[in-house]
Image (tube, rainbow, N blue to C red; front, side, top):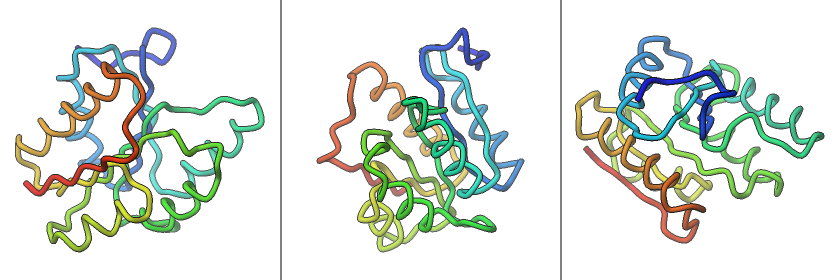
Length: 154
């Protein structure tokens, strides 16, 4: 299903990545989600965190889920996870980390920081399919089970 404007979507996903090529690839993979989604893009963790903090005053969030890169300027993914998870208002926002790192230690460390899933950004269809499936399952199955983080090593 194509990505739609926010007012016509069922779910808004925050895509946080400084690389425009990676954002393009991720947007393309999200086209395979059967639900109606829209995407709000941020170039680093600070920009996304500020958007959530500014919207929290109105008891709303700019997105229902976050897809997060680790290696970014200003505020990287680990710093974002620490700051975001420290604010209890955002405790139930699922975060999927996509990273070029493919070692189990890095992928596990982001789960320990509060990510709900971590996936190696290999660029192949296994990772893209896993991302689309994870997001679709979150939407279809209701609230995410925060006790069962997902590690995908493509």
